[in-house]
Amino acid sequence: MKVAIVIPAYNEENSIGLVLNSIPDKFKSQVVVVNNNSSDNTAQVVSDLGFSVISETRPGYGSACLKGVDFAEKNFKFDTLVFLDGDFSDFPSDIYRHIEKQKLTGADVVIGSRNLGEAEPGSLLPQAKFGNWLATSLMNLFTGSKFTDLGPFRLVKKTAYDKMNMQDTNFGWTMELQIKAVKLGLHCEEVSVRYRKRVGESKISGTIKGSVLAGYKILYTLFKYLVFMQVPKSQVAKKS
Ligand SMILES: Nc1nc2c(ncn2[C@@H]2O[C@H](COP(=O)(O)OP(=O)(O)OP(=O)(O)O)[C@@H](O)[C@H]2O)c(=O)[nH]1
Ligand SMILES: [Mg+2]
Image 1 (cartoon, rainbow, N blue to C red):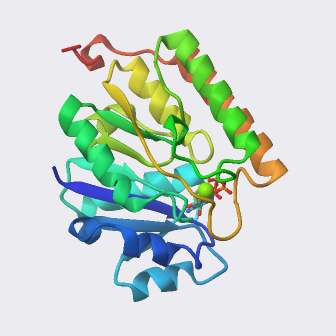
Image 2 (spheres, helix red, strand yellow; image 1 turned 120 degrees about the vertical axis):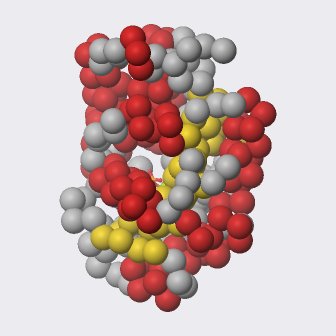
Image 3 (cartoon, protein in one colour; image 1 turned 180 degrees about the vertical axis):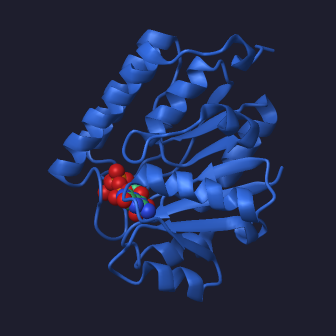
């Protein structure tokens, strides 16, 4: 397995170095941090540590992920994408859990679930917990999927990612990936991950505006793809 790691980061100068240094050595050569016009020294910290950092002018978590994959395609050799956050909430070494699960099951998508038992108390704010519960419950109800989280630490095989034609530029990105994976008949798995209180200031779930916008966009994205996504028969993965 050849892995490329994409890390969206906006004003994460205090955490991004901790994240990068915690990535197991064997994955460090194919990491890209996507910075959206941070007003702090995020980009400098990343390049001082010798990692690739690129800028995306369109704001938003989704824009950063899209740009990161685009960069990886042009600069890295990989068959597997891993996304994780730049705020040091995720434990980068948990990447082995995703990989092990993928190898065991042959999954196309492995979502790191913070609800399978290992989130530090207070690391997932109540609004984020509720939003994730609501969104995954609705998705499970309507599709038969079995997700427990929309966690940011996730593994996606490149062949699967290429079928998804990802579009969302902000908060709907994680949901878009999961609902598209389900509708395409891809093999999705979850794995328990650890999660801790972020370093630095929250951009999404820690603000009222961020929470409302994220909640709205996540549910909008779910219903948009539930109702309108047509899947060409040739694209539906054969169930093994
Ligand atoms: N490049 C980029 N990254 C972003 C943007 N918004 C958020 N991020 C990053 O996406 C990740 C998730 O954002 P967070 O602020 O941690 O959101 P959250 O995890 O819902 O909220 P917390 O519970 O406070 O951690 C972090 O690494 C952010 O730096 C953005 O507009 N551009
Ligand atoms: Mg966070």
